[in-house]
Image 1 (cartoon, one colour):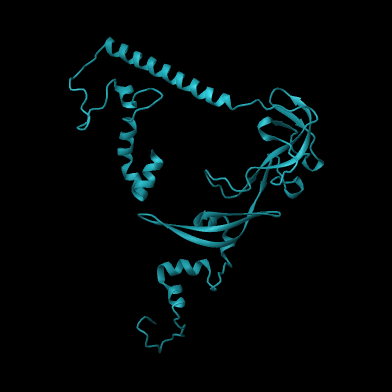
Image 2 (image 1 turned 45 degrees about the horizontal axis):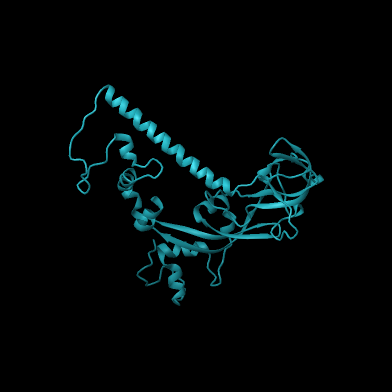
Length: 285
């Protein structure tokens, strides 16, 4: 519901949060088979549009407590039924994954960036290295792998969720020689250049984004990142960024305020100004 409101209301969605909350609390929930408002107060919300209950009803003392417990029991039972139904849907497509000693598996590793991007997954995540042979099974969901000497600092027992069955044509799989893995099975990717930028115009402000090229050995990934965060984390990327027209990112930032680049692109000639200049825009002490 919130996602739909953000799309419809765009930059002013936060001003309509009370209305969104009211609509959600009065919407029918399939799990409890009533609205959250009705579950909390024991009756439907009365509005000018839906005045279904015309009479007033008051419950006080022990009757109120008894009614509350009754509604809570009903909600718990309906939630349990909904959870069981969802579990049945999941179990029909679920299979227990097990490996035998001697099988070969891939090991999952993840890229690590100095710049954290909440809720975003890059093209380099996740990846797998290997394959490695299973030496022994440790418990029900852990396996011991035969790791190469270059990974001697990594503990050799892994949860089954980090393993993937070996396939004959792993075109998307990385070899450990291409990575510099840390002890927690992450490898670092670093930004190398800024290739483009854009502006997202909101109601009250503008957000500047830059297109960043990330690299780790012979792999490459391109993402959009907020310019302010990148400037704080990687200021060196903005020192010598020049586009095809010969302008830097700083030129475009100044252009948004002073219009310098726009004037240059319009073919304006750059003149030398001094104290004898008759230009009205020049002021000298």
